[in-house]
Image (cartoon, rainbow, N blue to C red; front, top):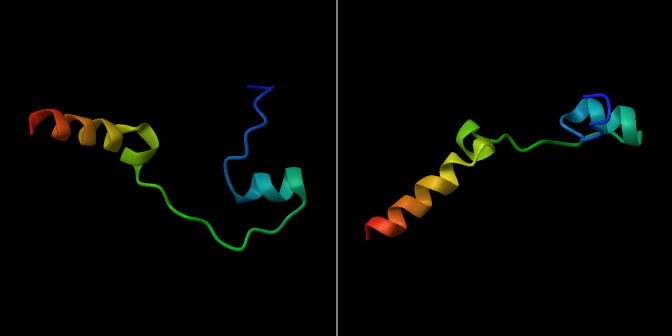
Length: 47
């Protein structure tokens, strides 16, 4: 936890890089978990 320097949100960008964020792209929860990718693979196998 202490060594995780991943930028996760707009506040992290401002704090770590000193830059303002112009916009963000929302992710669906399924995309974030990789579930959408797994569903695509299942569909391809069924065909």
